[in-house]
Length: 472
Image 1: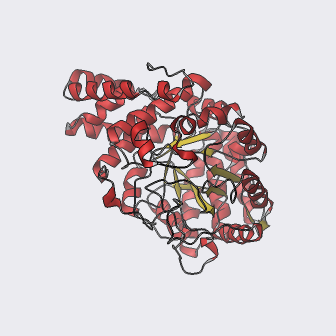
Image 2: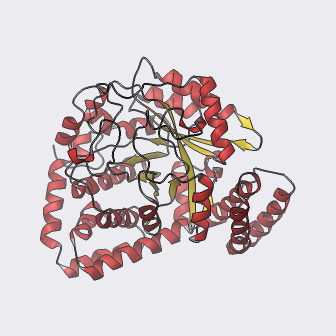
Image 3: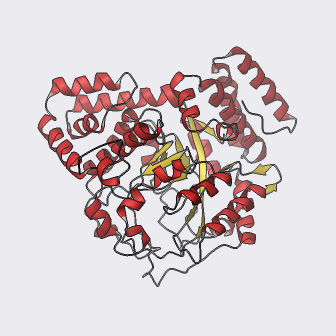
């Protein structure tokens, strides 16, 4: 089985021999400065680089090269995403699971963890709690269990979430992170109005994948790896990929995730809407000492930077697994979406005191959403609660063409500022509001299109009078 990015077979578009050859090539050329700078010059055009070229940059340990990688990542991030950082929160519906993933506390052999599944009434309470924080975008999460968490339960939960309008709150985009499923089921999710379908590969190394998933439906490497193709066949054109760094050698994983992005682009004409970069962290019944491929901070930051220059258009997500310090560093290097005020336990948002007994992983950044919003603004970023592109049908290749043409600033910049204004008016602490108003006043003047800029200024004034949900 040879390497073929256009193949629909997992072992051909994520080809083990190709990755091993690629890593060998990178080792042999890591000090080939002529080649390295040729790759960097290509990267500077902001059109992306291949998995092979990215592997050479990852392997190269020259300080000047590493500095240039970071500079390029920051420049490319600014070019396509400006200072905007999209805010979201995970919502855990159920931790019942029939899989045996060795790195996840939801594995079916874990008898310590209390098993919970939210009723629709409990989901309403969770959503109201999230709306009262100011969230507009959720990523729903659930273990894989066809009896306790069938697709019908997920669909009903999505309908419930969208139906809740509390005070000025509304969840406008529901992203879905559930197990690989069929084309028919992906069509049902699409018809339910989901935003992005998210599925982490965990590891692209087939042998390691099968060892890490010894039993349960997730054991099937090909079915899991080919899920995004079925999702796109089912009509979902915004998909999010990711690996859990630390399960396997990070060099292998970087090549694998970039090959997956190349495959989606080659077959469907549009790459991943998002790439997530979680790292293995402690949780109930899980000890990180059991995994000897831990990724140190310096390498983790370099991985984020290389993904940004390799796939310039993709959104990049960092979760509360990471500390405030780490999140601050990688924001500069390519991250465009972060969670805030997250609870990773089932039913955790209605609890006044954090209860992590049913959590999927330990949260490092435990700050409230308001604290995260204020922190971002103090760093010069624009926290965005925008869902306009999804609601206007600008998804998949339509979103990507807007991004690549540079016209996105005329939509995203005013939309980000108007949704930030909503947050400031309805949810923010006084100090946060003061900082935010100053930020909006200066950043609105940077909207390139004069007509849109003037219209946005008008809308911002109307929002002072209580009007909401303006968008371009």
